[in-house]
Amino acid sequence: MAGSLLASKPTPAVTPSPVPRRGRLRRALSDRRTRFGLLNAAPVVVYLLILFIYPIFSTLLLSLKGEEGGWTLHWYADAFRGANLEILLTTLRISTETSLLSLVIGFLLAAAVSRLKPLWAGLVMLVVIVPHFISALVRTYGWIILLGEHGVINNALTDLHVPGAPFQLLYNELGVVIGTTSVMLPYTVLLLYAVMRGTDRRLLAAAAGMGAGRLTIFRRIYLPLVAPGLVNAGILCFILCLGYYLTPALMGGPKQTMVASLIDEQVMRQNQWNGASALGIILLLLTFAGLLLLRLVKSLGDAARKRGAAS
Amino acid sequence: MIELRSTLAGRICLTVLSTLILLFLALPIVLIVVTSFGSDAFGSFPPDSWTLSWYENLFADGSKWPAALSLSALVAAMTTVFSLALGMTAATALVRSELPLRSAVYGLVLAPLVIPQVVVALGLFLLFEPAAMLGSPIAIALGHTVLASPIAVMILMATLKGIDERLEDAAASMGASRLTVARRITFPLAAPGMIAAAVFSFITSFDEFFISQFLSSVDTVTLPVQVFNVLQFDVDPSVTAVSAILIAVAVVALALVGVVRKLSGTGKQDGLLPTEPAVGLPAGSETR
Image (tube, rainbow over all chains, first blue to last red; front, side, top):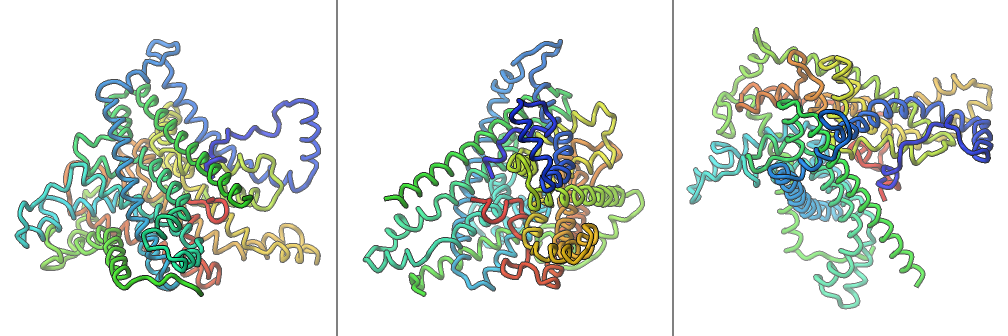
């Protein structure tokens, strides 16, 4: 998936091309199934070129334009200075924390579900998937009522006379990480569950039969088997966190401002489109870097597997 | 079947942990639904007494909620139509034909799922602002379609892959025209998938926030944007009722998909919902 996403936009079939290619093209066009395919692919390709690729392209242009015309990298320099740089680093920090937490929690749940009987596994996955289709805004609001100073959790803790209650659970990093993790969790659970369902559990039994301890089995057999899934889920989660806006904006304090909030602020309040575009392009490049990493890891894994099969 | 036996302690530990994790996912949602019927706006759980007044307040005179609700429904309906049309043609091209540059087209179609939404929203803002289309429901729906169509394409691709092409060939060999084959064979077999694609497109648009936020104007505000605007200043009991309505819409929609799948007998082996494509993860072999 990652590889194909990185591919540049498809060139339309009518672009002038060298002669031998044109010959191939004409042959391809004479095939009925190919013509049928091009005809059917055209609407979505044209749509996305106009409403997806072109807008991103104009964002890129705007981020390179100076205030009095001409080209400049001034907006990018701004993005990596002072308060903006801090927001960029905050985004990376919160994304890392959230993806690690989602990975650990998702791993536990997926491991538990992969041992259940199909009926129970289906029910548990329903509890994972239904929240995913409920607006993230609504779930964030649920956390706000839950974690507020007079929220359900703090009230319960105060009633139990827990020392130090009520705790500050909202408008700080803890609140943001809790809220964002609950939004990201369905992705990691689904990705890890798919991998775990595919692992051959007889390998574990075989290792035990040969005298390996539980910790050894987990470390030497199970973890390597599910490692590709863990890397996949972790990177995907990180990418999705980078541009995430709702939960950090509602549950964070001033120290948890993320890049998406900064972009929103620059467009809506300051009319600072060029700066916002530069920030958007930086987010985009970070996403591409993540996707590239995903692809690299995948090809490394494939190569290792091929070596293993050959030896 | 040889299995590695798990210890009792390990089993109990894992069960307790997974129950806590499931609570972590479900609790905020359950809390909103319960609180929306409680007379004390928040805090006490379960509420001391019950009321419907928060819901009545939503539709009182001068309330901004009905307009936001109808705008969201209108935008979501338009998005569903656009995304279903694009999804059906795209899925046909990707599954049922020899397509040059197939992987590039597939990548382009899926790209909106991983590109940060704020970048998409910003780009669309730059596109529609000069055209003076900010606040137009059509502009918002066109924007939502960028996010909804990949999901529709994935669901419909899975649907088309599940249809036995020999049925169509058989009909064609017995003299049915291409239109007849599409109308009498392909369409009825693809209908459950199309309903699922429509439902997920609708929910995607109905809950979308960022694009709506960038493309809305002062007097055209979708439901999620309105919720966000209220939440930025205060925690308001009417928001609880609206949130409960949003939850109900999502649950009813998912139930609808589940019932259709059950009735049509499709996808028995992979659970109640077409999970991977609907969540936005490419299904099956193409994940790895």
